[in-house]
Length: 160
Image 1 (tube, rainbow, N blue to C red):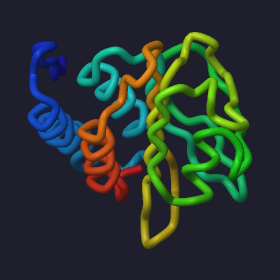
Image 2 (cartoon, rainbow, N blue to C red):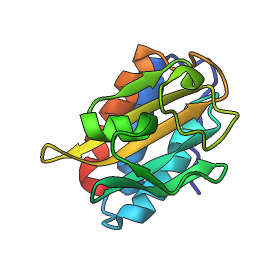
Image 3 (spheres, helix red, strand yellow):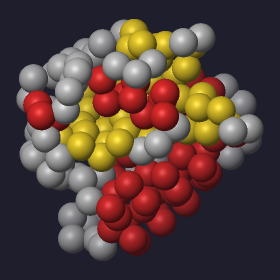
Protein backbone atom coordinates (compact mmCIF):
# COMPACT_ATOMS: atom_id res chain seq x y z
CA UNK A 1 0.00 0.00 0.00
CA UNK A 2 1.18 3.51 -0.80
CA UNK A 3 0.64 6.42 1.58
CA UNK A 4 1.91 9.67 0.14
CA UNK A 5 -0.14 12.16 2.17
CA UNK A 6 1.30 15.36 3.64
CA UNK A 7 0.08 17.67 6.41
CA UNK A 8 -2.27 20.40 5.17
CA UNK A 9 0.13 23.15 6.22
CA UNK A 10 3.05 21.85 4.12
CA UNK A 11 4.57 24.74 2.12
CA UNK A 12 3.84 24.55 -1.62
CA UNK A 13 7.50 24.20 -2.64
CA UNK A 14 7.90 21.15 -0.39
CA UNK A 15 4.47 19.78 -1.37
CA UNK A 16 5.30 19.79 -5.08
CA UNK A 17 8.84 18.48 -4.55
CA UNK A 18 7.38 15.54 -2.62
CA UNK A 19 4.66 15.08 -5.26
CA UNK A 20 7.29 14.84 -8.02
CA UNK A 21 9.37 12.40 -5.97
CA UNK A 22 6.31 10.23 -5.27
CA UNK A 23 5.38 10.33 -8.96
CA UNK A 24 8.86 9.09 -9.83
CA UNK A 25 8.63 6.27 -7.31
CA UNK A 26 5.13 5.27 -8.36
CA UNK A 27 5.77 5.21 -12.14
CA UNK A 28 9.39 4.01 -12.19
CA UNK A 29 9.70 1.03 -14.49
CA UNK A 30 6.03 1.01 -15.52
CA UNK A 31 5.50 1.43 -19.27
CA UNK A 32 1.68 1.48 -19.33
CA UNK A 33 0.65 5.10 -19.84
CA UNK A 34 -2.95 4.61 -18.67
CA UNK A 35 -1.87 2.91 -15.45
CA UNK A 36 0.61 5.70 -14.80
CA UNK A 37 -1.94 8.45 -15.48
CA UNK A 38 -4.43 6.72 -13.16
CA UNK A 39 -1.92 6.56 -10.33
CA UNK A 40 -0.73 10.11 -10.99
CA UNK A 41 -4.29 11.47 -10.88
CA UNK A 42 -4.81 9.76 -7.52
CA UNK A 43 -1.45 11.03 -6.32
CA UNK A 44 -2.27 14.64 -7.28
CA UNK A 45 -5.62 14.27 -5.51
CA UNK A 46 -3.78 13.14 -2.36
CA UNK A 47 -1.17 15.90 -2.42
CA UNK A 48 -3.05 18.99 -3.62
CA UNK A 49 -5.75 20.32 -1.29
CA UNK A 50 -9.08 21.91 -2.24
CA UNK A 51 -9.68 20.07 -5.52
CA UNK A 52 -12.92 18.71 -6.89
CA UNK A 53 -11.32 17.20 -10.03
CA UNK A 54 -7.80 16.08 -10.97
CA UNK A 55 -6.80 14.18 -14.05
CA UNK A 56 -5.62 13.96 -17.61
CA UNK A 57 -6.87 14.66 -21.08
CA UNK A 58 -4.87 12.94 -23.82
CA UNK A 59 -4.18 14.37 -27.29
CA UNK A 60 -5.86 12.33 -30.00
CA UNK A 61 -5.57 14.06 -33.36
CA UNK A 62 -6.97 17.58 -33.08
CA UNK A 63 -8.85 17.05 -29.83
CA UNK A 64 -8.39 16.05 -26.23
CA UNK A 65 -9.89 12.79 -25.01
CA UNK A 66 -10.62 12.12 -21.36
CA UNK A 67 -8.00 10.11 -19.55
CA UNK A 68 -7.75 8.82 -15.99
CA UNK A 69 -9.05 11.19 -13.32
CA UNK A 70 -10.46 11.55 -9.81
CA UNK A 71 -13.73 13.45 -9.45
CA UNK A 72 -17.17 13.64 -10.97
CA UNK A 73 -17.82 12.36 -14.52
CA UNK A 74 -16.34 14.72 -17.10
CA UNK A 75 -16.57 15.82 -20.71
CA UNK A 76 -15.12 13.11 -22.93
CA UNK A 77 -13.89 15.11 -25.93
CA UNK A 78 -12.66 18.70 -26.08
CA UNK A 79 -11.57 20.27 -29.39
CA UNK A 80 -8.28 22.16 -29.41
CA UNK A 81 -8.86 25.83 -28.68
CA UNK A 82 -12.11 25.31 -26.75
CA UNK A 83 -12.43 25.74 -23.00
CA UNK A 84 -9.51 25.97 -20.63
CA UNK A 85 -8.12 22.53 -21.50
CA UNK A 86 -8.43 23.05 -25.26
CA UNK A 87 -6.76 26.46 -24.94
CA UNK A 88 -3.83 24.95 -23.03
CA UNK A 89 -3.47 22.17 -25.61
CA UNK A 90 -3.62 24.55 -28.59
CA UNK A 91 -1.22 27.10 -27.11
CA UNK A 92 1.12 24.75 -25.27
CA UNK A 93 0.91 27.17 -22.33
CA UNK A 94 -0.30 26.73 -18.78
CA UNK A 95 -3.74 28.20 -18.08
CA UNK A 96 -4.38 29.38 -14.51
CA UNK A 97 -7.94 30.67 -14.33
CA UNK A 98 -9.16 32.39 -11.16
CA UNK A 99 -12.85 32.34 -12.16
CA UNK A 100 -13.83 29.77 -14.78
CA UNK A 101 -17.26 31.36 -15.17
CA UNK A 102 -15.57 34.50 -16.54
CA UNK A 103 -13.43 32.50 -19.02
CA UNK A 104 -14.78 32.92 -22.57
CA UNK A 105 -15.95 29.54 -23.87
CA UNK A 106 -15.52 27.72 -20.57
CA UNK A 107 -16.81 24.15 -20.78
CA UNK A 108 -18.65 23.41 -17.55
CA UNK A 109 -18.28 19.69 -16.90
CA UNK A 110 -18.86 20.21 -13.17
CA UNK A 111 -20.87 23.24 -12.10
CA UNK A 112 -19.10 23.19 -8.73
CA UNK A 113 -15.77 24.16 -10.31
CA UNK A 114 -14.83 27.80 -9.73
CA UNK A 115 -11.12 27.91 -10.68
CA UNK A 116 -8.91 25.77 -12.87
CA UNK A 117 -5.26 25.00 -13.58
CA UNK A 118 -4.37 23.24 -16.82
CA UNK A 119 -0.76 22.33 -17.63
CA UNK A 120 0.32 20.88 -20.97
CA UNK A 121 2.48 17.76 -20.93
CA UNK A 122 5.08 18.08 -23.68
CA UNK A 123 7.20 15.43 -25.36
CA UNK A 124 9.59 16.29 -28.20
CA UNK A 125 8.10 19.78 -28.41
CA UNK A 126 4.53 18.51 -28.84
CA UNK A 127 1.61 18.54 -26.42
CA UNK A 128 0.71 14.92 -25.67
CA UNK A 129 -1.72 15.52 -22.81
CA UNK A 130 -2.84 18.09 -20.27
CA UNK A 131 -3.06 17.83 -16.51
CA UNK A 132 -6.34 19.43 -15.42
CA UNK A 133 -7.05 20.52 -11.85
CA UNK A 134 -10.37 22.06 -10.79
CA UNK A 135 -11.28 23.63 -7.47
CA UNK A 136 -14.63 24.70 -6.03
CA UNK A 137 -12.88 27.85 -4.72
CA UNK A 138 -12.28 30.96 -6.83
CA UNK A 139 -8.62 31.94 -7.23
CA UNK A 140 -7.52 28.64 -5.62
CA UNK A 141 -4.39 28.26 -7.75
CA UNK A 142 -1.26 30.36 -7.27
CA UNK A 143 1.96 30.70 -9.22
CA UNK A 144 3.50 28.08 -6.91
CA UNK A 145 0.82 25.58 -8.02
CA UNK A 146 1.56 26.34 -11.68
CA UNK A 147 5.30 25.84 -11.17
CA UNK A 148 4.74 22.64 -9.20
CA UNK A 149 2.44 21.00 -11.74
CA UNK A 150 4.65 22.18 -14.63
CA UNK A 151 7.63 20.48 -12.95
CA UNK A 152 5.55 17.33 -12.51
CA UNK A 153 4.44 17.40 -16.17
CA UNK A 154 8.05 17.65 -17.31
CA UNK A 155 9.13 14.84 -15.02
CA UNK A 156 6.44 12.35 -16.11
CA UNK A 157 6.20 13.20 -19.82
CA UNK A 158 8.07 10.07 -20.91
CA UNK A 159 5.89 7.84 -18.70
CA UNK A 160 2.46 8.69 -20.05
